[in-house]
Length: 217
Image 1 (cartoon, one colour):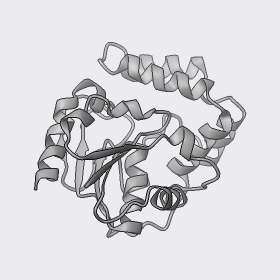
Image 2: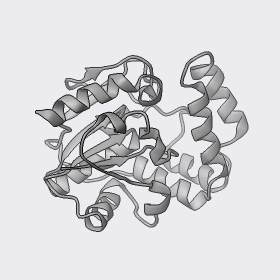
Image 3: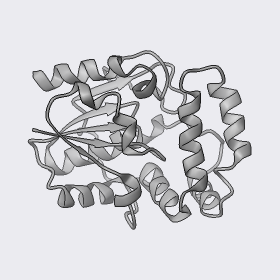
Image 4: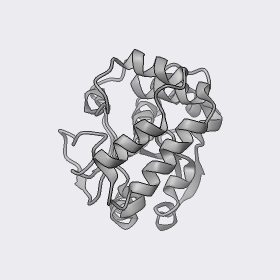
């Protein structure tokens, strides 16, 4: 059994560094910055990953945030088991930081006018000041500011573009914090954990425990 890890928007595979060591199995870490190029939505990206990494029903895909969104598409394609951490199977669960149409947000990102220091500072003051996840949020935002814009836009397309995901396709395990300020709480059953969107960093044992249980089952 392989464990395939997919990080979220702007994240590196090391987002799983505090969780993965507690899990048993062969581990494969996807680097979105390297793998994501011309795909226009999560299903396109899932097809690419399924082919390149030969993902099958024998694998378990563990995704954080956008990575969980990609993971649920991999389940529809391959029948693999899926663990979503701070993620969704319904795009209406995404909390937009600003009341802008998705296409306009993508356009601003392409022009370098979305991921700006002023936006970062506003979101930190509003959502993360004094919280354990503050520094990690800043590091992710800084990466989105400095990275190749075409790669940032490619990730936004995966995050925001509509797909033909079947409503019957659901993760095998949802892990979510009610304090998540980026993704709303699932309507379906989930394992509640402390913290916010970045519980995987601030409370890794609360994330790895439920995953280890489902792997042992």
